[in-house]
Length: 289
Length: 250
Image (cartoon, rainbow over all chains, first blue to last red; front, side, top):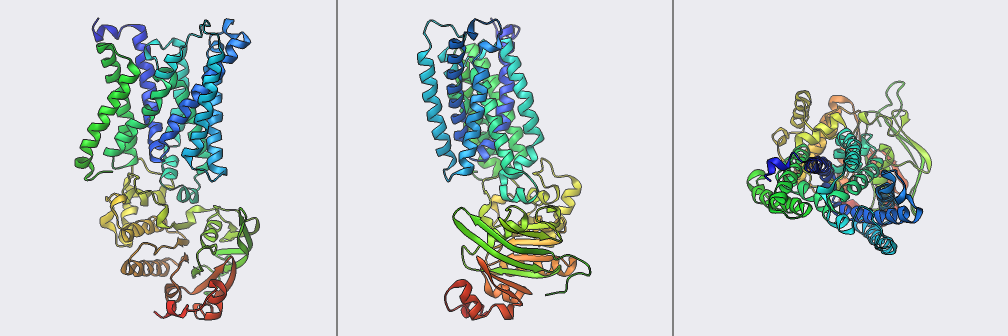
């Protein structure tokens, strides 16, 4: 079946829609993650999502919700999202209230979340069918996105993009210089907490599609490539979203044509675009960033 | 000190301000007031609480004791009336931005996605005022310390503030650029009648450019005209050792 024919298939259309929504969210969010030097945050929150999924799966199995007819309650996401939000707020709190650096704060939550995830998944009987395998969670399964998954992703995209677009100017100002922005009435600390919460939300719902291990790359590589080419924050934002969308389309098409896992193909496409951006950066910007 | 504007409140008034950060008492019982149109230099050794005082004046830090007011209103209530020039060390040089965009933040108080024509005209005029119009399209990462300082000063002045607050503006700036900076401040002050409050390590600059000097080391050790305050006993009390006349022999 040709690629054009495949695009008429419902699962391919859902994969494309989910991939594009994640690309736009991750591309825009990534600008602030990269520029605030929080690249490790993506990895930390993705692994927090793993812990949350483990806890969610355990709760669903042990409480009998798996047998209920309510689809959403049978998905560990409804526990993973608040779990990741708590982890994000915990990281923000540790950064604010202690002298620990971001990477140390994130590292603590990273390790605890993975330990919890492994613990909970290990005590779920192996014959229980969650409709979500550990491999899907780790490496993603964009082609198996269901209609309810897509609705959840679209809902999160609406919330995340409303925040990122609405607060772009304030976030940009606080990212440039938090103190200067606060002198102009920008509530930098509140914005940072909201940014972390937004990242937790986006990463958790996207991790089911792209995979926990690859999600951090999704958040960082397009924005880092854009940074190499951009001369303004606005250019960086547009380029980051554009590169995330292009790499999703190309990666999805290549994975279908070559029959390889889509999540890794998308991230490898992002890596190729990053190399191209690095090669072009000197001529576009005049010198390395 | 120049007289208070008729019926007007002081440009800056601190009353018995005390600030504790963690275990350290950074400011203690600090009281002074600055009349509109005054040029105040704040001097003191490292760790004296000078930058904390600036944060209190900007409304970024609420003192545990006492209060701070700008033009009769609580500090931080009217950010549009203040032009703030931060220490250069807070700047992230990897941020993709032009000098024009930085100056535009002074007008919009948000980071601009696109600079409008009106903002561009005002930003160019502000850059021109500080002799830096040619820097408008340059990336901030490529500016020297002196050029960056001018861009920050243009940002502070673009909204024609009634009070200009500068936190060690001469750090990382060469001798000529430093003197240009003081000239620009004095010219702005003469044109607009604005108040200038400048934290500095440079006692000579305080003596020659300010009409009031605050000697600070946690407490106020002297406040008044430079000739009265920048004397050996007062400086010794704040700095804790002799030899400050070398710094003043300019």
